[in-house]
Image (cartoon, rainbow, N blue to C red; front, side):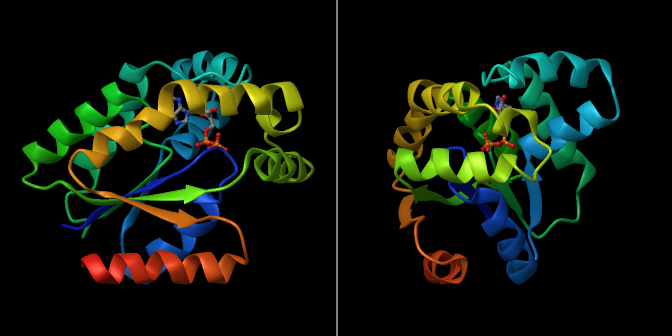
Length: 191
Ligand code: ADP
């Protein structure tokens, strides 16, 4: 298996690049944001609880997202590999992911970290909010809260993978195709 993490702050382009990467490399896309939004759309108890937290721009509890990822790994036994998007977002999630992958005799090949300035992030998210239907994209206070959560809890996840020399920084500004090209080059070097 070949497993990648696509990392970066909210609005850094993880969703856009993930779509292109899974098509090219045949990986299974696991986005905790998408999994949570699907729970919300289906009005499950988990979704209803998660929505309140997501609408404040905060992170949902680790055990909730770790449980979702664990089920998704079990439900895809034939996958060639996984592309994790929006996960892990805390050190506890990173440690849990390593254990889950170890049980399947696999691990993370690399963490691709998209780098984008904060002003550009806010601009992109407000723009996405005009059409995405995502309530967490329409309010600048919520957007800034998400970026603060990222700085306080998620940025350290890169330090976790840096210990194992797995972090690859990629500039997340420029055209979608340029960024995709830069990501592919890094992946091809590691495959
Ligand atoms: P973005 O990267 O634009 O913030 P996501 O779709 O990845 O969008 O996440 C939306 C929201 O879902 C987050 O603000 C958070 O509340 C919740 N969420 C997604 N993934 C996680 C995670 N791994 N841990 C905790 N909360 C998460």
